[in-house]
Length: 117
Image 1 (tube, rainbow, N blue to C red):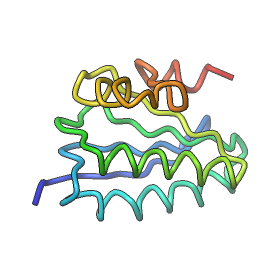
Image 2 (tube, one colour):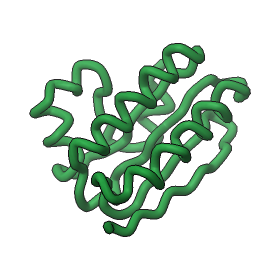
Image 3 (tube, rainbow, N blue to C red):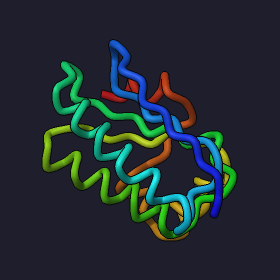
């Protein structure tokens, strides 16, 4: 099983979920409930914005793609804007290959994700 660390941070501009490690079928069970909690928190946040920060993810498999896409869809249903931050090829490449970048376009950093209104 891959090691993963997920933290939730309530900021003035958004709710931020930071992920460190490898996101695969062995670790997605740790990530998914954190993303669900983040959607819940963002739903009550004035900005209605959730940022999923994946810049320190070393591996991002299909389980991770599915988890982030599901988070995005739950966000839509809850009126929460979900944005992904990742400039690292381990995350950006799978998003581009699967054409998910048309839905969950990766931002290079948290500041850019917050500014894009």
